[in-house]
Amino acid sequence: MSLLEVRDLSVSFGARQVVDNVSFSLDAGEKLALVGESASGKTVTALSTLRLIENAHLTGEILFNGKQVLKMPPEELRELRGRDIAVIFQEPMTALNPIYAVGDQIVESIELHTKLRGAQAWGEAKAIQLMEWNNQPPKMFVRVNTLKTDPASLLARWRQEGVDYDFVRHDWIDENLVFLLKSSPPLARLESFCRGDFYVQDPSTLLSVRELKPQPGEAILDLCAAPGGKLTYIAQLLKNEGRVVAHDIAPDRIALINENCARLGVTCVRPVLSADFSAEQTGPFDRILLDAPCSNTGVMRRRLDLRWRITPEEIARLSRVQLDLMKRAALLLKPGGQVVYSTCSLEPEENEQVIENFLKEQPGFFLVTQRQLLPWVEGVDGAFVALLSRS
Ligand SMILES: C[S@@+](CC[C@H](N)C(=O)[O-])C[C@H]1O[C@@H](n2cnc3c(N)ncnc32)[C@H](O)[C@@H]1O
Image (cartoon, rainbow, N blue to C red; front, side):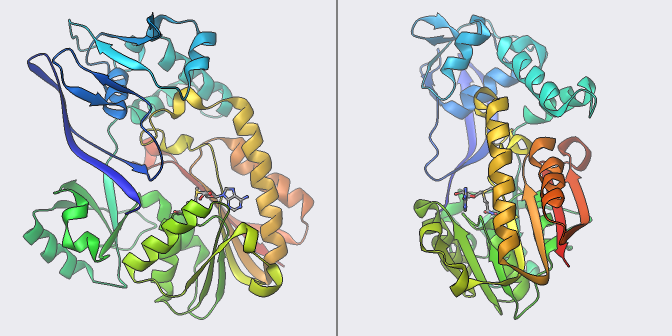
């Protein structure tokens, strides 16, 4: 299974239940950064702990080497990013303002965001709306895998399996393609999951594939493909008829592509590791999807430690990687072909600016459409999608 899923997690503090029904998912291999024990003796995991802090349902102490993390100056806080720390809660609990009462960390991340995006782009009020969104527990959405089933059969099965769902509508997704899972037994125990009737992914992730418009019989490259959420949707739209090369740099993540394709019944995909990739053998392509490695700032509520790790330097580094990958895609595209660039970042440096810089250097390409999904506007994860054509 590609995802470690934790659902319906409850955390108690003393006699009182402070968090109920939290659900989140981690990519395989990602580690929980914090593990602690609440005063009531219950072990709480990193993410639930972070969630508690972010939502500020209690006042507490976070100790690292005996020092209170929330009271540390920003320089010391920065050094803690990505390290394991212990968490100790103390009474009393209070319901505090979710944004401002949580100490230097949240204030710092708001500042970082406002600075990165530029107050002139969205302004402080929008930055705060975004932080409020980022502090909400993420919802779980799934795409129906029409290579294996159809919506009506899946819903009938879910009713037998005790899955509670809701319908999801957005202008870029077909009716009954994506559902919200309101509650369910652990996915690994569902027959519908094990036999590949659906794939867990946010509705925002489908926009790039819709823009790509893959056609049966075409040669398609997914340049950064793992773990395969968009890739397997491409295969679904192709009805497995076509030639899709799934390229990625990370061997362990290529394994996730294989796993997901096997579970979902995808047969038109050939996974290729960067080290083994030869353009002569695989290209050129009719369409290329470049779902670039990015800062993930559009999915912060799913990647809870991100706000402590992300730096302006990292964003600058990523934007250089993204431009290099776009240039690589350009070399592999047929004349008249189309490339879709996407990220789950909200930073202009990783989105519009990458496209602008690319177009300056590549006169043979032109921008067809560009769209950003903003969490507080669309109610989905943040995403950026640009469709470019080669003359
Ligand atoms: C945003 S994720 C892709 C998610 C995927 N498209 C999906 O929908 O499931 C970015 C991927 O890019 C890969 N990657 C990073 N640098 C790369 C490079 N230089 N060439 C190819 N893949 C790269 C990472 O290993 C990671 O799997």
